[in-house]
Length: 220
Image 1: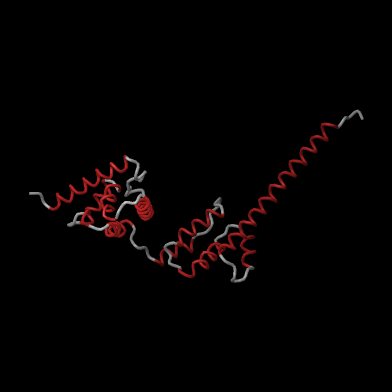
Image 2 (image 1 turned 30 degrees about the vertical axis):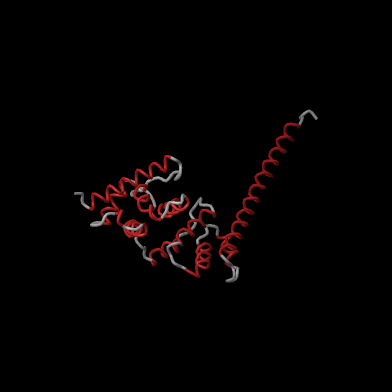
């Protein structure tokens, strides 16, 4: 007589075979396994959840689909985390929670905010890249209703160009984060246009000078 663990393992294998058939028929498209050492679990979990929904995998099949997709290494980790129970005996939400606790433990809010407030624009980093990094860091800071204000303050205070900072410092407290970014981008674009215009004018002056020298006839 087979043990409950053996039966559970066989059920997982059968579901995996069924899933493989579904994939071969093109019903599920492509979803890579999870790499414990290199991948971002939170982002992978969000993608996988959407993947199952879009492909209309019923709730009754989500556990086995999940266990089949994540790959053998992550399944082994999950099996250890779920012990003495089998992963296949857990709900989809329970499985995600087990991996959440192990791979994405809740960070310290104070620590996350410290990283956010220390972030400044790096040399050679564009304004859009800087904004994207600030938004990313803010996600774990739990600013709530103060998010726009926190982003605005950090954006302005961390800018590399002091001339842009000085202009934004003159704004009143009604300045929003999107408006601050918009103004900074406009000033950056204007500065580049001026620089490019000066280069063109300099080249034109040099060409004109060279033409004059070429047309000069000492015999005249």
